[in-house]
Amino acid sequence: MALQLAQLSNGRFDPVGPLITAWKINEDHPEVPKAEEVASVLRLVNWRDVVADDAAKTVFLKPPGMQLDLGGFVKGYAADEAVRILSARGVRSAIIDLGGDIFAMGHG
Image (cartoon, rainbow, N blue to C red; front, side, top):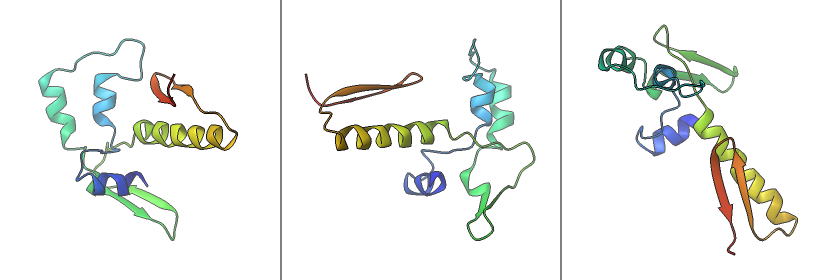
């Protein structure tokens, strides 16, 4: 599904994670990487280099060192599911916090 979103967005959403690692976003002290570091990892960011085989249930990343980071995709999916479940149970307004990603539903 993340690769479908990458294709639909023409690569604006790219689930490939080396830039996330360079920025240290998932660490206690994120930082802006040096331009040289960004340039060196950009070759590893291209969703078209992810080969998913649905039949075999495998994923192959073409360039060595490439990583996937599905955080942006998974949290959005989790928020959609939370809204679906809450709505099905009659909840009309809520604030959903998924580790810093916030979704508000309803009106107050």
